[in-house]
Amino acid sequence: MANLDFKCPCCGGALNFDNKSQNIVCPYCDTEFSANDLKAYTDDIAETGKEDTSWDESQVQAYTNEDTKDIKIYTCESCGGEIIADETTSSTCCPYCGNNLVVSKELNGDLKPNYIIPFKKDKDFAFDALKSFIRKRPLLPGSFSKTNKMQEVQALYVPFWIFDADVDGRVRYEGTIVRKYVQGDYDVREEKHYSVVRDGGIGFTHVPVDGSKKMQDQLMESIEPFDFNQAEPFNAAYLAGYRADRYDVSKEETFNRATTRFRQGTEQAFRRDIHGYDTLEVKESTLQFSNTEARYALYPVWLLHTLWNDKHFYFAVNGESGKIAGNLPISKGKFSFFLFLFLLIFGGAIFGIVYAVSGDLAISALIGPIAGLLIAILIMVGMRRKMKNVRFQYGAANYEKPNSLRITGRKDIYLYKKVTRTKRASSSSSSNRRR
Image (cartoon, rainbow, N blue to C red; front, side):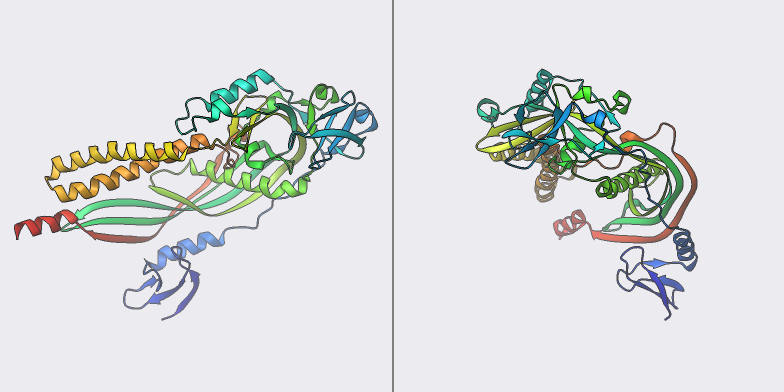
């Protein structure tokens, strides 16, 4: 057999040519390919080019003396946090640890924000948003709403690096078409695997990446999107009565996260052009960036901090849209109760349906609880997500340029088929009853 310098698309193992079947086979996972299908696949992979993900940073400029004459830096002596505020503020409270801040120095040499989104939501709205967020959460410990102590609510302009780019690229997915049928005494699952390739382009604008180390990145992405249509050219007057976090993450440090969001956003957008597959998984993507731009902006955030059972819980409210994010505690007792309740309800219902159809008590007793447990777990996962909604955004779908998606190439290449056969339990039971 002759070794091919190519890895199996299924498991990554080295492929061999089988002279009996005249096909290319994988000795590790037993998948099989025709020579023509494999050639089409390898030719397609070879078309992938080199990525270009460089950024234009010319729009970012430093503060001038005129910009900084009315603002100062305040440093927390406890945690080291630094914020920017107008010069009439003699002292203030640290938004991260709650201790007092003191004036330390003038603001010199820092980069000046290009834009600022002024606060649209006030303090009362932030309080009401938290109350609404907590309300109707069946897994919340009963004492949380009654005994938790709300700490100071603070308005803070959070620094973000915002990125624009037009993206041209190629994304290769692996798609499967699943067919299930009965063959004699067996349940058969047939999977056909395809290499699904889309070439094209899309534009993104004002994709934000958190520029503060002390601010939790997941928390900030959880309150997106920010509407850049509400942004104004930066003016220190907007800081009057408010504070701004001083950025401590350079634009260079945020490039990787920005590139990841553009990549995921492109993969999501191209996926919208693909139809007819039961599953679709990204295997490879190659991007070329153009018309790139990196700028600096301040976005409004209300920070809320509550103390319960000596544990700290942090929440953030988008000061422009009002969207709230935060993680709530979960009662283990309530979680177990609802899991058991849903297991009884759905397990009992499925047991009854299976028994009515098959008349087989043993099969009904097996399928009912298992199916009921799976449904109960899915419901509990959904309920838990409502309690803990702090997570990274996938991609940049909220920042797509209108009508910018274009698909210039489509290739769907058949790879291989995988068949699994499972002995039908019902046929075995019927055979036992006949004996």
